Amino acid sequence: MTLYTQADSNIRKTWLLISIFLLLIIGLGWVFSYIFNTAWILILAVVFSISWSLTSYWKSDSIILSLSRAHPLKKEENLQLYRIVENLAITAGLPMPHLYIIDDESPNAFATGRDPQHSIICVTRGLLDKLDKPELQGVIAHEMSHIGNRDILLSSVVVVLVGVVALLSRWFLRGLYFGGESRDNDGGNLGLIMMIIGLVLALVAPLAAVLLQLSISRKREFLADASGALLTRYPEGLAKALEKISQDVHPLREASDATSSLFIIDPFRKKRKRWFARLWMTHPPVEERIKALREMGK
Image 1 (cartoon, rainbow, N blue to C red):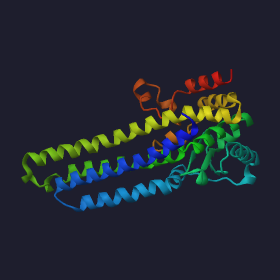
Image 2: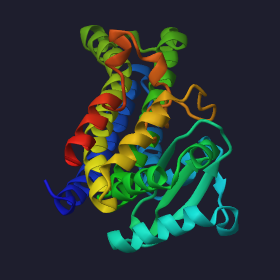
Image 3: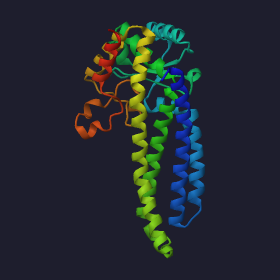
Image 4: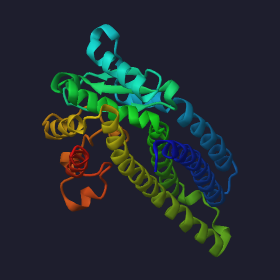
């Protein structure tokens, strides 16, 4: 798959994801409207799903930057970084992204935005302090690749919608628990079946959303590594950067479960050492990524 076909694929996946989200939330609303015998839940679900779908497309980057406590990085604050980004943007044929920084000593970075014209690269203070120029170029090239193949739109939308699905599922479960006496009990077997369907949907929806997020984020990292290495023509730079970032002992305080999949390396990797925790890894193993990069350099 080329970068162009990957970009087209990610755009299609984004709209498919938004469509699935709309159907899922409206479906939950319909089931719970039946259980509680009130139409306002369905109406609210329709309005809520449409508004959050639009928000995830237009404002996901702002939400992510706010969650990460990132702020704009001025050119005079780090002229070297600006020159690296400008040169790589020209090489990749992409617009100059906006630069943001997180004041955290843990080295890491991510890209976000809805398209290359509205793209953002966010780095931590630790990344700028601890990486040398070839390593920093490797990381920025990796993030530029996410921008070029439209990973940023898909991954940003996923972050917002997964969080919304989890929140709504908790609300629905609480409604089942606290609203038990207000249900219409005259529905007989059908009412019981609908209640079971609602319970299953509320429990399974967040899990399905997280699994979707995992499958998307794992695959995109290998492609961004490879295309980033081709952009700099120096795979060893990114390989060394991944080694240095993965070995850093400082936790990234501003990361969360919602945003962890965006970063170049999982901020919570040290907590996922047991086999069960590894099932929920948002990134492929760092060792595999480094091996693939060094094989490119041979």
